[in-house]
Length: 301
Length: 254
Ligand SMILES: Nc1ncnc2c1ncn2[C@@H]1O[C@H](COP(=O)(O)OP(=O)(O)OP(=O)(O)O)[C@@H](O)[C@H]1O
Ligand SMILES: [Mg+2]
Image (cartoon, rainbow over all chains, first blue to last red; front, side, top):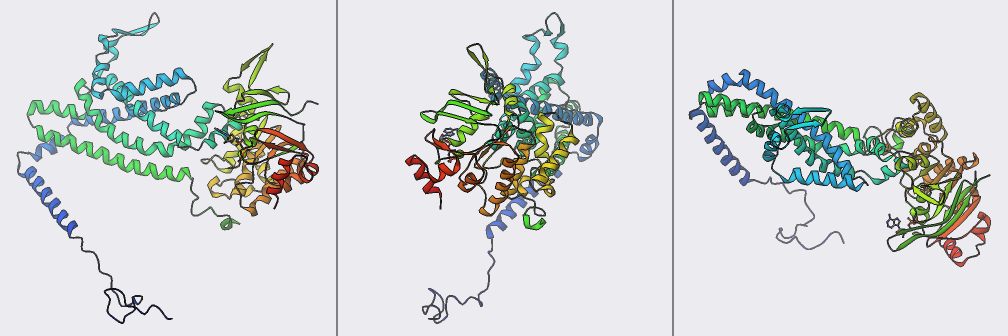
């Protein structure tokens, strides 16, 4: 027998269905994509047209883009992002370790922290910190060193504590996930060479957890850039608040909002690129997969 | 001379399961003891109790004359702190079935991690000793490789070097060759044989009866959380006195 004698269903009689050399590939047409693209373009054009023809003085946008109030707001926004994120990551690591501690007091304290700060709105927390003087008129160690709360709780301080502590509650969960992702065999091996629990975490577990922790934290840095704008309600002069201050005076509302939007997008774009580079670096640093150039025994033998 | 390990009536339960049901065993200094037995008989659990990866529920273990896990004051036993347990673990090194090399560190970093971080040895000294150990296990050229770039047999030899770098008095092996391809088993066994000749006290859980016969001073057969019988390899492996031992050996030998 040299192949089936029956013709393919629907194929020309007498031609073997296994004879495929004469067939041609037909590219799919994707009409849907073309229609979708046209609709998107039309909508986009309409929006652009509205902005161009609308009551927007683009010259004003250009003029305020580098105004000193806007630039100092930008610096404050970036600085707050850095500080709040640093505080958030530090607290996140600390509370993740506490949540996983064998000590029940630490465990419950950490659970309470996460529960409280994830469970209340950020705006509310900011207002609480800013108005802390109403509850604690003075803070410090009684008898040793004390300050008036209103002096300490500047808009910067209140924003830093509000954003950082709130961020810590989320980061704690991210870090905990990262720690759980590390093979328990790594911890056991560390114990057998005499490491204590904390040394094991610091030297063996956390460095390996980084690969899992970095991407979501990078994401949260970007989210933090925009979250700082919430602090305008407690008079922290970040970029959005400074833009508002200007448009309250000159009534160029849309223009100044566009200025702020341009700067937010610029910062986020830079951070996105940075995150990408950082992730690539860590994927290489982790080396759980053999690198192509090394690896197999035979290649080096 | 005090025995290296004394285990007395050791008990360990996991919920309703008695993983160790009164294990008593002595290991002399320089002795090589192979532990054999069916799956689930408690061999790994026993090893893990010796270096306190598991806390025992009953009985007691002494390592090199020191009661482990507890401080004794008169007739009272106080559990040791994390730090003290870590110190006691320095007496024993452990080699795992699945190697457990630190994935984020190179071979050399894996070996010097303990000496530098735990023992606080100067780094150049630790590196020099690590290189000597790498020579000994035949992998000096792999010092800059990461564990994932090595074969199983190479990883296991590095794991042995890592354990040796801490200068332990005992080495515990939990099925060190079970995860290896057959052609890589020999290299690892050769390193272990070499250690045994050098006078290292070793407790080896293994299914390699050939290795046990050749290297062990004593073979211990465990079943259902108990030591069923023990004796010199020639006697126990060729002429066991218990029916269960006979069945097991018949099943394992090809
Ligand atoms: N962490 C644990 N939690 C619950 N049960 C456990 C745990 N570790 C071990 N066991 C149980 O204890 C018993 C003894 O286990 P162990 O690992 O010591 O056996 P083993 O002799 O090493 O077996 P194998 O040859 O398969 O490695 C088994 O029934 C096992 O399921
Ligand atoms: Mg086992």
